[in-house]
Image (cartoon, rainbow, N blue to C red; front, side, top):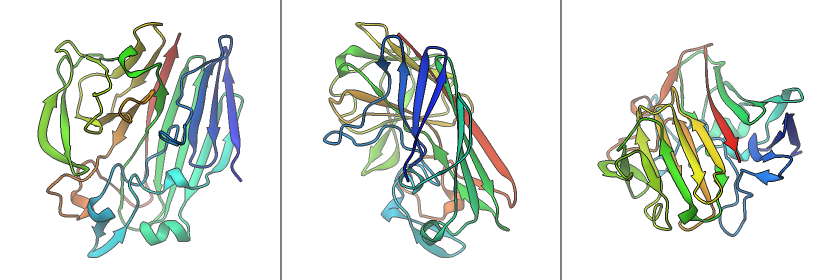
Length: 287
């Protein structure tokens, strides 16, 4: 059964669905100001899907491991599965997904995948924990896909902490090419308009910035997402939509010339038997 978990801290609250462990609301209570996209079905029916065990699309939706081919959905299966609530407090919750018959058909590994949320006033920390419970290496990548509401595209500005002119890798038929383009004003800012995402996501690798900030030109309302220790960043929206996704990734879609052997996939982690990894990012908001 899908449950809604509500976290509170100071003047802020966050709501998380147990289905998909998906953040669906982040609010400033006194002003009733909502920062998350509210999943309008006719535009894009998600709030902040969790990406696991792969980020992006695989060629033919397939990968190979130890000579065997497996089919899997874009961004993996976690975003469409029920998580178990394993620990919950006033301002924090831990949700967990483990292997089952559905996952083993797509991903033949024993794992425990946990999402940790902790709200501290206007800052929400989101941590991804992967445990390999099997006897062999576990190939894995993961990431966030939070969508933040905006008034309209021309009101939004994106600011990189340190990167004055980060290059975005171009997609070719949904796969990452070696071609790049400049997308900022040369001073680390993107003045968003209705054409910014006309050719799909902006994809960055190994930025120097430890955060990227999205702000409203008219109101000053902002969202700042931390990027430290995340090798890839996606920024995406439906063209002309009233949301923008800021997505820290440990992993990336297949490259245009990738041949399918998962241990050679860019961004993949080969997690040793009975070990774990945990990475986190934070979402700071303000009005």
